[in-house]
Image (cartoon, rainbow, N blue to C red; front, side, top):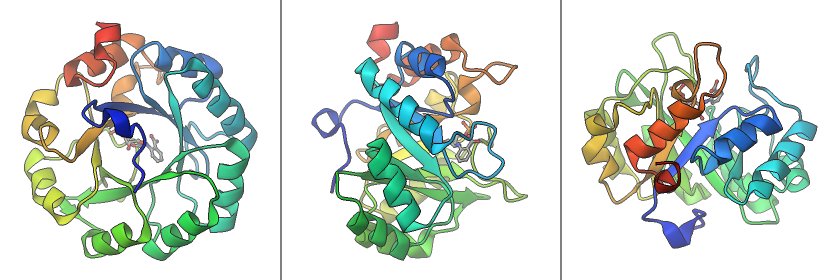
Length: 239
Ligand SMILES: O=C(O)c1ccccc1N[C@@H]1O[C@H](COP(=O)(O)O)[C@@H](O)[C@H]1O
C-alpha cells in the first residue's frame, strides 16, 4: 500500500481543492497546504480545468517543492483516467463520485507509475452510503479514504456541511486505511474533532469552502488559520 508522504505519517496533511491558475497554486504553497486538488471530469464544477491545465498546474505545484497535485474527478473510465494520469504525471487521484471497487482495481493495474488512490466515502445523515463496499475497496487497492458529506438533496463535493464527530468515530473501525476528513472544515472547528484528529488512522483534512472568501477566491488568511488551527504539517512555517 502506498500512502505518499509515508516518511512523515505523523504529520497531518492539508489538502485544498479547486486551484485553476498558477497564482492559486503559488498562494496555496505559501499558505501551508500540502496537496492541491485539480478538478477534471467534475460535471458543471466551477473549478473544472482541462487536461492541458491539469498538466500545467501539476507541474507548477511540483515546482514549488511543497505541493503534491491531486486529480479530483467523478470520471470512472479507466482508460481515460490512465491516459490523464500518465500524461500529467499525477501521483494522487481522488475519486469523489460513486466509482466501484472493480474500477479501482482496474485503474491500479492500468497505471504504470506509483499512484495514491483516494476514495471518498459519502455520509448522508451520518450514515456511510458505501459501507457495504469498504472491504472490497480495500481489496481493490484504495490507499486512503476521504470522509465527506452528501447533502439531503444529493449534492457531493464542496457542500460546506460538516460531519458529526460521532458518525466519523463510528465509521473508522470499519476500515484499515488512513483517512482524510472533509466537509465544512474551518480554522475554528478542530476542537470539535479532537478525538477524530487523535485517531491513529487520521491523515489530515481536505477543504474547499473554508479556504475561500466571499468572492469564492482562495483567501490566504483562511488557509494559514486552518493550517494553524489543525496543526497540519507546515503550520509552523505559516505561524
Ligand atoms: O469542491 C468541489 O466543488 C468539489 C467538486 C467535486 C468534487 C469534489 C469537490 N470538493 C471536495 O469537497 C470537499 C470539501 O468540501 P467543503 O470544504 O465542505 O466545501 C473536499 O473533499 C473537496 O475535495
